[in-house]
Length: 290
Image 1 (cartoon, helix red, strand yellow):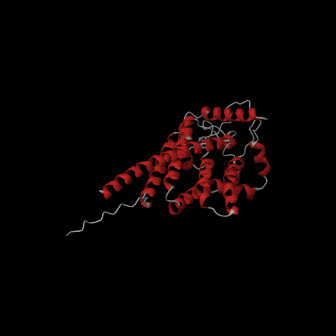
Image 2 (spheres, one colour; image 1 turned 135 degrees about the vertical axis):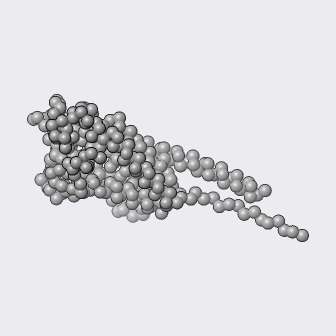
Image 3 (cartoon, one colour; image 1 turned 90 degrees about the vertical axis):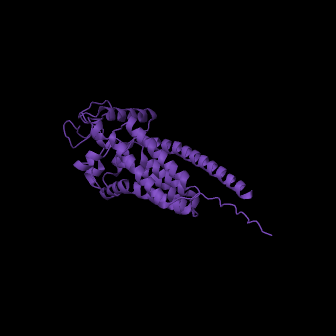
């Protein structure tokens, strides 16, 4: 008498592979960089007068003044006498933005594989929305408002040649801290100017990505002190983008909106995929029980 072989139910898994995720990140970053620079400052200011980016900056200033919260130049002035302090924030602006996000990305892959796809998708959607913002709403950052226009100095991308009712005493008063105090790179170099998009300010990915880092790692944190430090990261980033003259605070609001939409999309995509995998698993269970 033969005994029928017992069928073993398959294990419910959602596997991720590091090499696949690395390829996705690499491909996405190449596409992001290429698309971002298709609408770069060298393209927008091709005629030598970056009116669109300058006009959008005036719109942001007008909105902030209407709200009574246009104080970026004053805040920057408070800290300009402290050269070492400003240099620290220049380095912070140019390095931590990528290092922290990549570190959290890897940490999630290792420690939270069950929800890693959700946060990966959130980051991708947030960044994609930022690309759309850069294309539709090129924005001259505060540090460039008093810099020469490209028509008068091809190495510059400022708006000094454009009249504005918002210029106090003939200028906006913002300082380009990277150019004057130094940092990990320089926008004044010909190579950087040719490949970068200096009008990619709205929304601020520095704020969007730093907020993503907080929400993504929060369940992994146990100590209150660590949680407090993590929460301070987006706040420190907001302080950084303001005192370095790289953004208006309103750009940070744009970054939060992009993150919020990205979070909803990332959660929805993950939930849909989990439903698809659950359906496949239930079919496999039925097949194993027959």
